[in-house]
Amino acid sequence: MTASNLHILQSYRHLYRHALHAVQYAVPPRYVVRDELRRAYRSGLAADFDREKVDKTVAFFQSATKKTCMAHKILKNLIHVLWWKYYGPRQNRRIQGLSKGEIEIRRIAFQHFNITVKMLNESMGMCLPDGSVSRENGP
Image 1: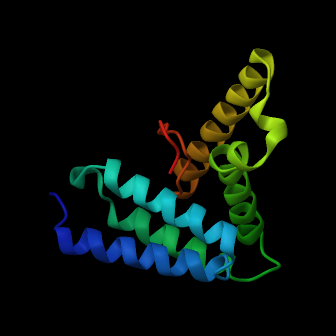
Image 2: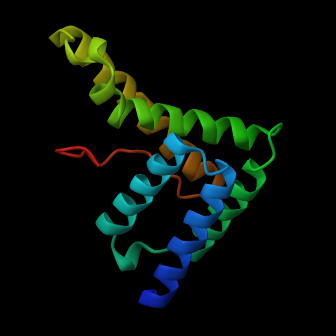
């Protein structure tokens, strides 16, 4: 059974609102969250929509609002890595002039990161963005 467009839109709004609250509307993380949610909802299929995973992810974001919990640290590091993957090369000149070997190391590191986030999603039943869909021209 596929979800209606209304349910998908509501889940997007819930995820976005709770994610913004979890990152306390901070400027770099809020744009990473926005771009990752847009990418996930634009590239996903309505048949893949799972309300239970969305609810668990919202609960994860709600628990991440507390500064001292593990969920906050996981979310903070997830957003930090995604920022360096997509925004860092544009703003850091040291990354722009990398050799082929250094680029390969970065590619492998991000590949391991994507696998780790997928395993986290599977074990906790969530739908955190892992950044595995490549972008041609950035966000």
